[in-house]
Length: 174
Image (cartoon, rainbow, N blue to C red):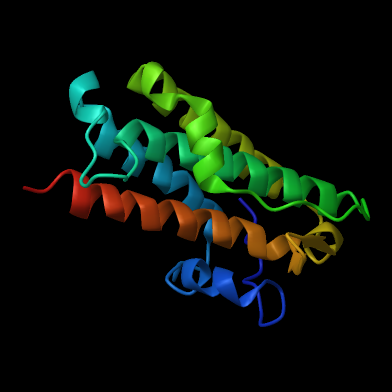
């Protein structure tokens, strides 16, 4: 797999620094691929009742959190596709709580959600593998902020790492 360049200051809104900075691996495609196994190891042994667990009132269930990862990755991949293809359209943001509330992820079997995450992640890796250096360097506007395509796989990996850590520390302990 080719190595994708790490984003530099100005490639993304400051908000995304919290996801990019913890991603230390310089081979982001390997990081994205390894997260498939990590998510499977963490979630595939849960039963349906456990997957509905919320660690506090008002928090998402494990199924909802996984659905959020899927929806967000799909959104990030759309942004990357649009910008890499030189589409000048300004892209919208998202209200993650509204998206989760509107999705009814708790009715979907956990195995199906996990399978969807795995397949989407494989498609994400394949997409970024095929981009030219010129496409990776293209910038666009998403949620009223400048973003460069090369930042998006790092944001995707960091976002997933953050939520998988939340599962480990808040859902599966105690």
